[in-house]
Image (tube, rainbow, N blue to C red; front, top):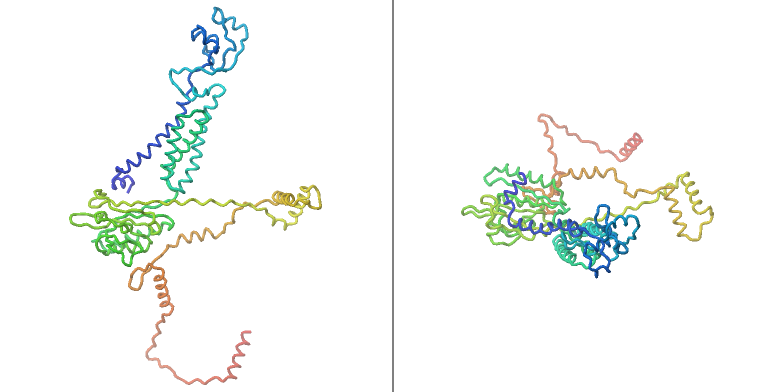
Length: 521
């Protein structure tokens, strides 16, 4: 069945899924604003050098003060990073441009700061900390620091989420984003602005990784529908055989969850079946329910529904007319039972006609990856057994020691020279372990063997415990090895000849024995 159809069968997107996705998406939507924030807070408005301070007390207008203080560029606009060292009063008179071209005028930087056109934007980090002219490279540095925080956050929060869980790291990341984002808005210096932007980048990486990335620990979901009670026994056995093959194809190290309508009643109570089910079933067990229990024993699984004490209303999975029973079950490996915190029926939610939704809450334990040990490379000292290698090594070592015959007193220095010469002359190994030629074949043979955990006794009952299985194998081999073959029947009409045989004397037997020894020698 396609996943879209299956999702529609189980109720599609419900209220819980919508709330869950919405809450996770809110911080992620903020990520777009943080990535594009630099385009707005670092916008560069039109600017020019501030006019000379001694002109502020004059009666000239703003245009005249700019004319005598700030030069024009080739396009007729005010220059952004230079001004006249002294006010050019002659520019106020006519024909002043011609006189200006004939003489060289001294220029200086914007020593008194800049004036910004705040018509389109009232304040940015450019106007706040004058990140123009010689300081314009700091604008790009702020974005670089932010992206560095994104990179470091991916490295830090990615590993911590595997160790401490995603919920805790997601809460820490959201809190860090809220605090760092607020502090960024009220930063009093450009250094603090960059620092808080760095923390914002780290927090966003933690949010994205813990919201979207999936666990490296894979698990398998299996769904099925068992034949109904009225079907033939052959059809039921075929279903369980196919399910056995599916389970045997999954490695035992992988997590498996089975959710199916088994059309059987495992019953209330767990006498003699404590290892695979709990006490809280519904009604009495029938033949189909016994098949479910036998399957759980064969595959070392547990019937999750029966382990949690609930009202009968929260255990009944099938309800039609006056019939109220439990036929839908969730099974998992016995080793993963500790990860399950609850399992119940959702009252009022119907997956299909007469069937009610069964919800299982699991906390997946993610195993941390083991770090690979560093490979140690070794010098190939065994090559010294060859005469040509030994002679070359002696020659190179003598050259490295400066032609001295007697070794220096400093042994550490001498040992390092010997090791370095050995690495150059003899070479070093790759450090990798030599792979056994039969390793791949043994691995393949091991995968071909189907694992059998249970057998049946003389009466056809399934044996699951290790002691009972060993006892049954012992009985089988005792019968196999000690069984006597049927003697051939004598043909009727043939008379046997009975005749007394003389006893062999000791001396005669000794002589016969010597003859045999001589013939073999």
